[in-house]
Image 1 (cartoon, rainbow, N blue to C red):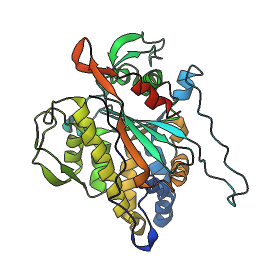
Image 2 (cartoon, rainbow, N blue to C red):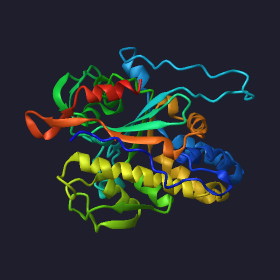
Image 3 (cartoon, one colour):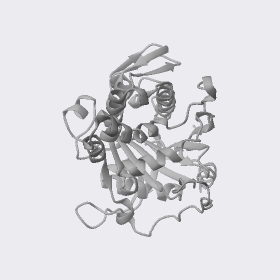
Length: 354
């Protein structure tokens, strides 16, 4: 049950004119928000999109009791740009959650504002220079030592031994999720990004759906998904069901679901790469509204300006230079339905991201 590295696809290779698809061209969607505002002839669009983003002051809550920041080479001066783009290595904790209450989330199978959990956890590592990246999935069933976390009501939550990784979000929200991820990996999470159920489905629909190929039949009553093996074009609701399904494939473990999630991420990137959103302001606005309306970030990424800067810094990141990998795990010795980090392989993986 050890995670296996997987190289990035080359299916979106060179295009006419020498242009190649870029990883996270979705970040370019945010970059285009300023163009949307200009096309609309008013600043209301920019203000609306900016206001969409929810943020949490994670650095303020955690203070200095965190892993050290990575050491990066300073951006060279004299590059011809008045404001050189950041190019240092970066680690971003990305969660998919059912955290936001409301009828739309409930209809899609999400929880309410209380007791919500993170269904998906990925650490996105951008190498120095930001021309290559590694995406590491953390199985939500991983048993960890959950550290004491600041509680929203004041005080701290107690340390918990042998707790499921995704329980951190349920207990202490984004702050505890970040602190638990840092305790597990000993890697500083420079940023935090969370997307909720309904926002993810809206994003897929705004993109016109995504195309995926399944290797086996899927029949999962819990995620409400039934697919025969083969190629499928999925709308937002079915794409979300694919991201959440686990009981209808393989042995029903979280590791099977992670494989589907990684395939879906690549399908989304391929879809964005194939679109020319900047020629259609209305379509661009719809996608940008779906993206920003579904996000919760740390305070370092809670404005369009900051997201734009991140997106621009990723322009040299090619989709073929992305590696997806699952944190190496083995069955927990005292619970066959749970997993624990497989050492020393897991530690070596995290060490490589510092």
